[in-house]
Image 1 (cartoon, one colour):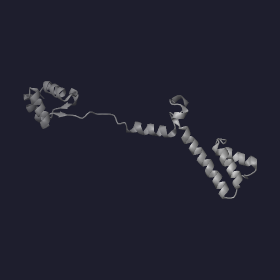
Image 2 (tube, one colour):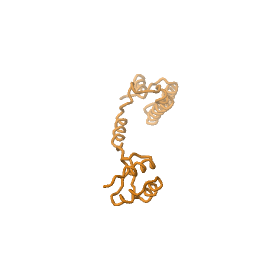
Image 3 (spheres, rainbow, N blue to C red):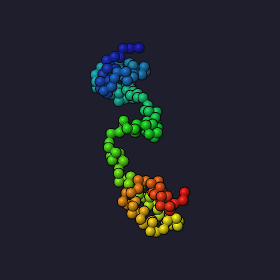
Image 4 (spheres, rainbow, N blue to C red):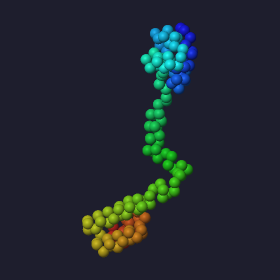
Length: 151
């Protein structure tokens, strides 16, 4: 095998890669040995007589899958990892809308199924609007205290 260090170095410089990525097939070794200028090397690269390999990389597929799984399990979301304020992480208006809709839906269901008279419904509806209830279980406990709910 002939020494093709010069050609290998020139090809690497032309393509902007390391010398280890330059391959010279043995069947073209004589042609490559005769090429001494950069133009000659460029032509040989274009003709495919000097091959520049693609870079090798490590697959990130498993890492991405594992990170997705950890995120799904809720890892990295606990107090030490939180950056934004509570209101930035969960919009207070969105939380309020979810809460009030659930309470109103429940009150309507009670009224429509005859478990609650319209006067009590209206009173509880307005209390809910005023923010009296923290959540649905709070509404249920008030209904039990009023004697309106038998559960």
